[in-house]
Image (cartoon, rainbow, N blue to C red; front, side, top):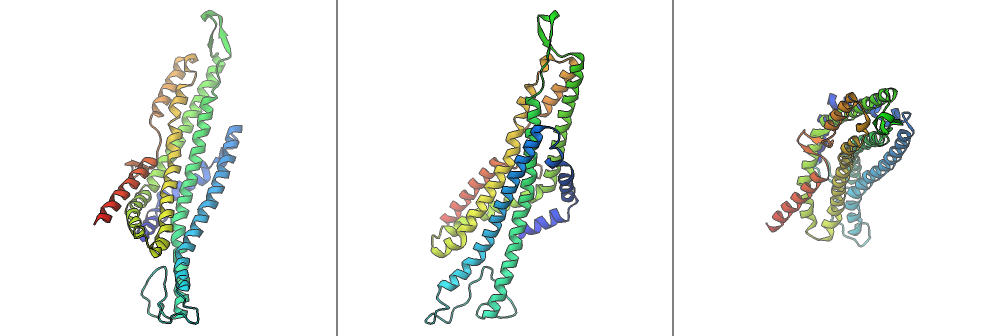
Length: 332
């Protein structure tokens, strides 16, 4: 966990890429700046706003619960040992969430124990914030990207068809000259909108790629170790490690599913672009549609160091590998 925190400190807080993508999101990409484009854009903005609000409350609850579990369980073990009962034992050492060597007595002195509990609560709260709040900010960006993809899909799916019927071509529908100008402008707007989405996605990959790589490696290593600790099946091991195991696996699944939203939604673009009424357009507009169709063939994903896609597939690979390593360590 310290490695993950230090990696985020070095690769994000002191990185110009992170500050650049954060500024771009808050000043240009946020759906607030697109809500007046259409009625559907306003509806999407409100939907994403509600999702972001609920997800923020959910992740804050996770942060609070993680800190409480991590610090309250050792204190509960200390109380359950009967130290405060008159007939209870008097030669116990205090149980703490983190064991650190201090220049004063912290494991048999009440004053020292109170100091170490306060320090552990503060340090674990900071660690939980470094873990969850960066995940929250990254997830909010993904939610807004998902909203942009939905707006673009709606523009493509509701593309206007020609209203004029040509008598010379057996009543075949054709765009008029004025309609062709409007159609050309709409296609250009859709292409520019798609370029903005791709540009922001690439900047996100460049800014968060290293962080996600370290985060996935952390889950790869700690997943099998936590399973190994829980496999002792003792009350102490389950109380101490089971909540942390569930929270970390839930964090991995939650983040991967959220990132999968981008890939699954962007995959619909090629069908939406091909569904445009290109057969009624002139040669110039057909060429633009062809170029647009070529650009949307590959689904858009956030990449780890430009190599692997962040999503459900990577999550499944990590889970399977963790279980394999756990089986190997268990057999030894």
